[in-house]
Every structure is written in structure tokens, then in C-alpha cells.
Amino acid sequence: MFQQLREDIACIHERDPAARSRFEILTCYPGLHAILIHRLAHRLWRAGWYWAGRFVSHLGRLLTGIEIHPGARIGRRVFIDHGFGVVIGETAEVGDDCTIYQGVTLGGTRLYKGEKRHPTLEEGVVVGAGAQILGGFVVGAHARVGSNAVVIKPVPAGATAVGNPARIILPKGREEQQDDRVPGPCEAAGSKARPAPWEAGPWKELLQRDVPAAQESIGAPFADGLPPDIGQPASASVDTAGSDFAPYGVGRSDDDPLVRVLHELIDHTARQDARIERLCHALEELGQRVDNGQHPLDAERLNRMVD
Image (tube, rainbow, N blue to C red; front, side, top):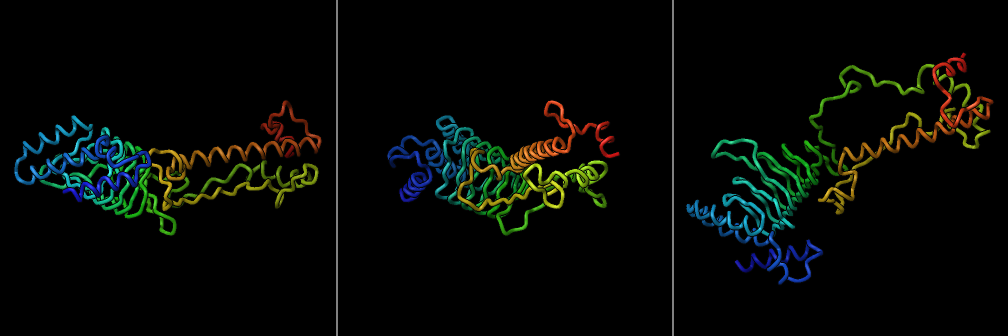
């Protein structure tokens, strides 16, 4: 028992940079207290003293703000950081060396007695603050669950789950697992992607006719007669194998697909603004008047220029 307690204190001292001494950990860390109380409650539960086990776990919740059912199985060197609001269900299993932050729920989606209703975390799993893992599936070894993610399906070993509902992101070098989202109109079977505005109609004719003539005058030559990067999608790679995983949802923005898409949209808008400025300057050099710095290519003027 004391050997296990020393392991728990040592793992907290190693993972938490705010821990200054082992005595501080022993006396001031509710996550450690919740684990110690749960071990007593779990022994009572396994011995058939169900009410006593529930009462001890109830006292532990009152003291620490962490609710662990006495039937749950908790491994060695599990670190519950801060811990307030953590809920771990009856059939949940937490493997060795796992880290759980505040507000995490290891819950179930079914109400049938006697079956596996809560998740299993294999060794080394990190669960970010506010995450919800719901169901009787397995989260693989050394996987990571992002802050406020809602996980309702298995997570492969070493992968990262982010978003609501959670999307599985595999490390570099492994093929990304397909998600369950509904494909967009351009992704449906047999459909073709819509061309960009500058790839068809009067835009294309205008760019092919007027832009090459202004290449030298604006001092920024365009490749193949078109502004650089037009029609070229921005590339993005996701590397979740690094050590800078952010359980509080800050730091690495590429862990979250929504944040990554927003950043790409912002970058795309900035690039479009720069291209419009270059086109306006080119038109001015060609003698086309641009009013108040606004884009001159409204429908009527565009038709006159193309004709």
C-alpha cells in the first residue's frame, strides 16, 4: 500500500510543475485524495459491502469534488489534475499512467444493468479538461482526448480525438481515419467540384488579356499570367505525436479541425485582398479608373471591359 502511495506521489511530482514538495502533494492534492478514498471504497465493493462502498465514495465526493463509483477500476500512477467535476462511472476502467483533467466524464449511453456501459482507458491516455467519453468502448494506449471533446466511438492507440462529436486524428505517417460527417455537394459521388470564379467566364478572359500586360508595370510578375497561388489550395499537415498536446484547448491550433479551417479561411481572405489590390493597381496602370480604392469589377463595367 505504501509503495503504491509513493508511486502516486512521485508521478504527480513528475507531471505537475506546480508541485513543490511531496508533502504538499500528500496534503493538498484532491486528485490524490480521491484515488486513495476510491481504493478503500473499491475494496468494500468487491467484498460485497455495496452500501459501505457507496457511502465511502460519497464522502470522497464531498471532500474532493471528484465522483468515482466504487465499482470502477483505477490503475496505478493515475493523476487526476485539479479534478473538480470529474465523474467516473461504475464499469469504467482507467489504465496505468493515465492523466485526467478537471470536468471529465467517463460516462455511459445505455441504462441496462450488468453490461459494460462506460469506457476503458488503456495505459498512458491523456484526457483534456471538460472532455466527455461516453460508451463502453476502448480508448487506445497513449491516445489523447482534447479539451471539451465528446467521444462516442473507439479511439485507436496513439491517436487524438478532438471536437464535438470527436474526430479522430492519427499521427503523421498513418492514414487518417474517415469520419462520419455527411459529404458536401461537391464531394458526393459523381459530382464535380465547382470551378473558382477566375477559372471561367469573363474573369478568366480578363485575367488572360489584361494581367500579363501589367506584369512589368506593377513590379510583381505573375506566373503563367495569373496571380501567385490562385487556385492553389493551402496545404496543412497534422502532427499529433509531439509533446505539446494542450489539454486546456490552447497552444496547438492544428489539433482542432474547426480552428484549422478558420485559420485557413482567414489566410485565404488575406491572400484574396492582396490579389485584389494588385489587380486594381494593374488596372490603374492600364488607364482604368478605380473609385475610392474599391474593386472596379462590377457586372456592368466588367462586361464593357470584356467586350
